[in-house]
Image 1: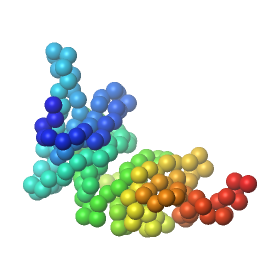
Image 2: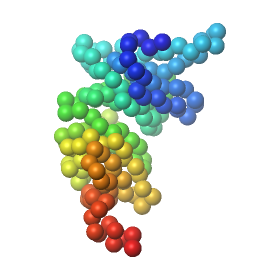
Image 3: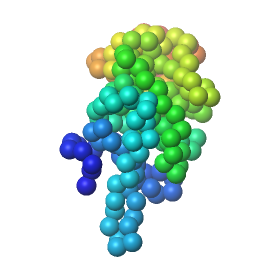
Length: 178
């Protein structure tokens, strides 16, 4: 049973088989009890100081990257290590969008700004992505040539490649495929 009412909106199974999940104002993992039952271990209380008593609402996504788990809420991003210990926290008043592994980097949409990638403990802007700050991004899909396929709420796909963003219906892209 979850500690607060609401749906579980995000699930992730890590490389060791542990199930991580995010719900309404809670996130954590499932731990096997001695009787074979599963119990939810809520990690959100570790971030009470960061939140200052403000609810963060739903966790929409759980992503694993370099031994850490990232729980993305609307305006808050929480990181824990594989043992569930606090490893980082970020807040963005403009709201977050998709978070995904792109090559050897972790990319996160900062709505109103564009895409940022994790460098050390900070997210730094990815050049040429400011136009991706306006629409909610649903997917950042790495391509074999180093490009990134982007899906958002607009009715067309976009490709980010070498600092440039183009709509998939761009004639230059279809000419490459011919």
